[in-house]
Amino acid sequence: MLKSGTYTVGLLLVTFLLLVGCGEYEQILKSRDYPVKFEKAIDYYNAEEFVKSATLLDQVVNIYRGTTKADTVKYYQAMSYYGQRDYILAGHYFNELATTYSSSDFVEEAEFMTAYCYYKMSPRPSLDQEATFKAISALRMYIAKYPASERVNEARELIAELSDKLVEKSYNSAKLYYDLGYYKSAIIALRNSLEQYPDTQYREELLYLILRSSFLLADNSIESKKKERLQSTVDEYLSFKSEFPDSKYDKEAERMFRSTQESLEMYSTNN
Image 1 (cartoon, one colour):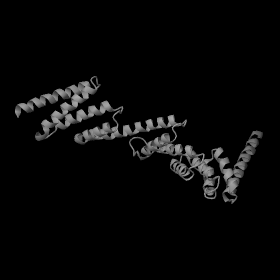
Image 2 (tube, rainbow, N blue to C red):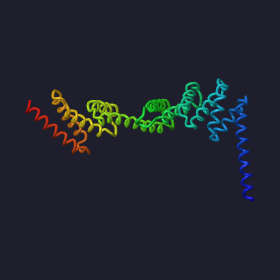
Image 3 (tube, rainbow, N blue to C red):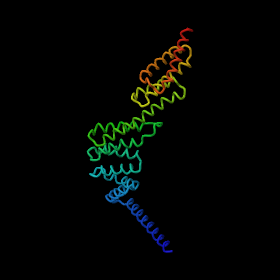
Image 4 (tube, one colour):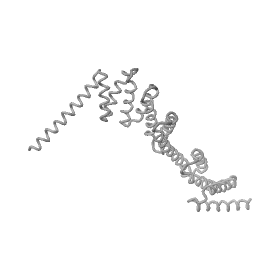
């Protein structure tokens, strides 16, 4: 019985404290004492209660505009939204801080965080990569502007990670034409991917897919284009072989080459 009573008292105490806490926050929301709002917003931020801190800072940000605390309010507003993982608003406010308060002590961090918010918004390779391009651009600008920053190495690592995502996106997009059997379009897309990312980790496979697309295109060509496309397949094989003489695709590449040579010989004999 005592244990049950102790439990009840404890539950009531917790409920009371929660109500008091909620009551305090509601009072601050309604208050016109803006210095108190700001101080409490920082307290909530430090306690990682980011929704409460952001809500209060939204209320005071315009009040402090033009004052010596304006950049500080804007910084914590941005950080409060970042803490909520709202990278769109956080990035917007970080960028606003950097552009509006160019002499602020927070500018360098705000510019890095603007780029980092784009990084956090960068989606998987199969989706649109607008945020990825923006992140890379912003990180490069940060490195150029702050070459001595301790975050330069981190920025470079982020750029490398984002670039790998773009490479994978390009590879998957190009390979899609091959998978769908659109070999002429596949050759163009695969070449564009190689031109855009010459050092891609997929280079061997891309060159092989160009060879195979060329072979299949020639094999299914109308008579008037067959010889030209057969010769193109031979050229693709020679290019592939010169760059990857010991390729994992070597057997299949050799098979296509021999078949193409035989077709060329038959074509020459019959024509």
